[in-house]
Amino acid sequence: MDSTGQHTILSQDGMLDTWQQGNVDNVDETHPLALYIYVPEHTSYIKDARLRIKLLPFRSYSKGIESSPSTTVTSSAGGGIYKSTEAGGAVVTTTKTEIGHGYVNNTYGTTTEQNHNHGIPAGTQLAKVGGGSVTWSSSGMHSHEIYAHSHEIELGFHQHLFQADDHFHNLTVPSHTHQEIKGIFEGSTASGVSCIINGVDRTTALGGKFYGDRSNLDITKYILLNQWNEIKLTSNQLGRIDATVFLQAFIRM
Image (cartoon, rainbow, N blue to C red):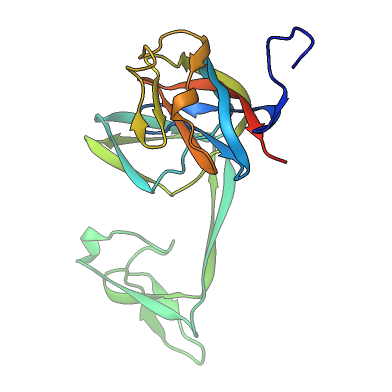
């Protein structure tokens, strides 16, 4: 007997042994907290088994964002006149290189409809080398010879205006992931807790469902000898449960 003389500690059935086993986890209706209690083969009988539960808020230690598949985002823009301003001017050189050179032919009308002159009035008599003369004329078909050359154009400070009608822009966002954010995040608290022992729902027999902490639920008669015992606790909503089973049993030597 113990010092009080009220409780047997050692008998023909064995020695009284006491132990406790617990677990804590997030829960919901389909993801229970599971406790696994092993009762050894040389156990004579269970003297006492008590279930204690504490209802806590859901807890996470990181907030991750799922990767996203590639998507195409379409945005519309109305019409309007848009202006872009250049800062300062510039000199633009354009070059065209030809093999050899060419001619530009021009046809003009009569001498009274001259489109240009070369500084010599029409009808002027021009002396020829070696003797004789010719009469100058600026009308009719003639040619100007053009050699390979380049042009330089100096652009001053200027603006460009353009008008855009209603249109759309398509932007493709490739699949990607987001960096995990470390920290402790809490949510709703476990509530409406059910208790299933070795595959049998014992909630009603134990006085549940449970919406608050319990420290002395007697499950002695539901614990089986010489095997693993499974205790599952579920919640009506996302939450967290801290559960402990306290056992006293006589163990044979």
